Image (cartoon, rainbow, N blue to C red; front, side, top):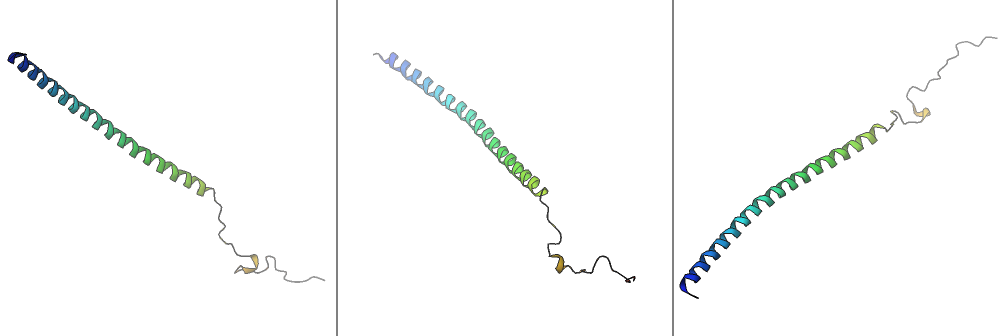
Length: 90
C-alpha cells in the first residue's frame, strides 16, 4: 500500500465516523420525541383512569339510599299517638 492509498482510507474512515455521529444524533432526536410523546400518553392514560374511577365511585354512591333517622320507632322524639281520641261516645 502506498502512502496515498492509506491517506484515502483514513479520509474515508473519517467520513464514515462522521456519518455514524450524524445518524446517532438523528436517532437521539427521534427517540427523545417518541419518549416524550409516550410519557405524555401515559400521563393522559393515568388521568383518564383516575377520572373514570372517580366517575364509577360517584355513580355507585348516587344509588345509595341512606335513611335520615335510623332509630327504632319507639326511640323517636315525637312518639305521640298519631290519632288522638278526644272523647269516647257512648
